[in-house]
Amino acid sequence: MKIMTPIVILLIGFSFGCAQPYIVGKAIEPSKVDQIVPGTTSENKVVEIFGQPTKKETIAGGGMRYDYSYYQEIPQIWTKTIQQKDTLEIFIQRGVVQKYDLKKEGINPAKE
Image (cartoon, rainbow, N blue to C red; front, side):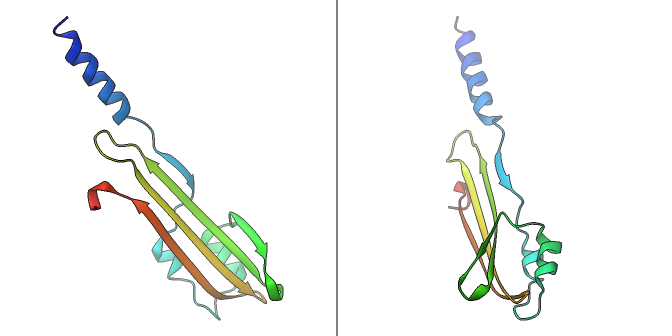
């Protein structure tokens, strides 16, 4: 019985540590975002770089907003779960990017 208790505790610890990460969407790479040049980059080039957006929305003035999102959650054994959420909004008018906004949020206990 004395041997079983530590073994059970280790097995429980490993089962939590081996949990699979939860990922939604495709990572938004900074090198790809750097390819966007407001006033120059075309709508077709945006789709070529990032693929089809998660969401397309018509905005005031007849423009379009393309939303790309990525979410990742990685379970940790002894610390908080690592979470990362990236959102890229691209505003397009007459087939050309007018502006974009990249937001990065997250919890990474190793960096806190």
